Image (cartoon, rainbow, N blue to C red):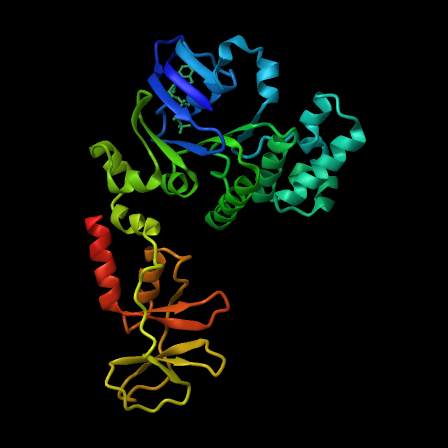
Length: 353
Ligand SMILES: Nc1ncnc2c1ncn2[C@@H]1O[C@H](COP(=O)(O)OP(=O)(O)OP(=O)(O)O)[C@@H](O)[C@H]1O
């Protein structure tokens, strides 16, 4: 666990970058520092591994003040990932990843095989180990940055805007990869971002900082979205806070109708305004008018009940003219339909809760 105990950082010119910050980043969890530019996120992060020393207060690592730990020793137990990866340009990828193990005195063979294993773990072809950083895309370089930080298996990872410099699609896959890795590795991660969506996706706990380095709120993402502490947090969360909150509302309790499906050749005769055409093997084909009018099946959206959130279910409903969301199983086959009425009732309940 990392503890900030009344930590203040005042730079030489008098700038107060962090002001009386107290919080805990629990072991095995991802704690995200988020806030507008200049609110002291990077300063806070760098005080953990003593790249910057606090002016007042204490930072404790599992109860020990970091101030009492020799910086090189401290940093051996702390992986550090920065924006644009910060790889050594003249070193091959494998040697970049093996940097810390080699510093720790591992023999070269062991350090290299650990590096290869890690490249695979972060989703890269180990053959890339023989390339130089400039021969990799930005997203691949970021993966190498994560592999390098994990090389000596440190219990703590500090990540400073690690995915900010890549395009949104690569960024999403890097975030997914981090969550997958974290499920296996259970590191204590402190992650800095200015992107509230990234904070909500990745954080077990999210610390929202305001300029001047003051903690505005520390909460799990769901609480943050439903109970922002003040106007600053509310504004920072943005206008679609209500919609985003739905990603924490489950769909397992949704009542599904199973009487709205029809075979592919359906030609009318249902009292329902819309029915769902389903293939012989149970897959959705599209919505048809119940009276048989209209022609080709209309678009549909699907969700997996129990696994996907209400946000996905609502998205699925909005994609189709029927206003209903098609529930499918892991095999893609239709298990039922969540009608607009059912979704409305669930939304009303979510709004109350
Ligand atoms: N070496 C320094 N000397 C003086 N002031 C500094 C120094 N480093 C940072 N600051 C100031 O401290 C404040 C916090 O900076 P910091 O980099 O921690 O913020 P940040 O939240 O990480 O910002 P960003 O999202 O823009 O990277 C800012 O006002 C910054 O200008």
